[in-house]
Image 1: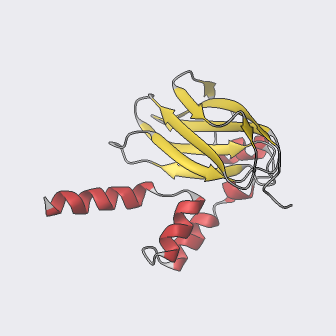
Image 2 (image 1 turned 30 degrees about the horizontal axis):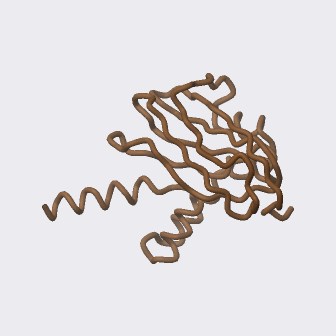
Length: 159
């Protein structure tokens, strides 16, 4: 049983690669600062428009998929913490990338999933203004996408 707990803990730590997740792991002392800086230095997080982000990810030809579900409010009253949920039934999921089209930096999260992980993610993200929330799911080496519009009444990002 102890071995199972260690394996589960190790898999959970590997699965947390979203920017917020790295910050939490760094603050808790579970990840050394160089590893957190390396993840934050990924060029995809510097993309300031959707086309650049898709190019950096190699996802320019992502196919629309009804097997990706985005849960988000129709209207978010405060853009500083918008609840976003993503679930996918696609087989062979490797990672989930959440993009916010009209944010100063488009890529909001990059979550790498171990092979046996259930592909469901819930997080809170900042949104500068009303925008499409777009999800890319990489499965078996191919990208699939879905999007949902979220209206924001009070923006949460500075420029």
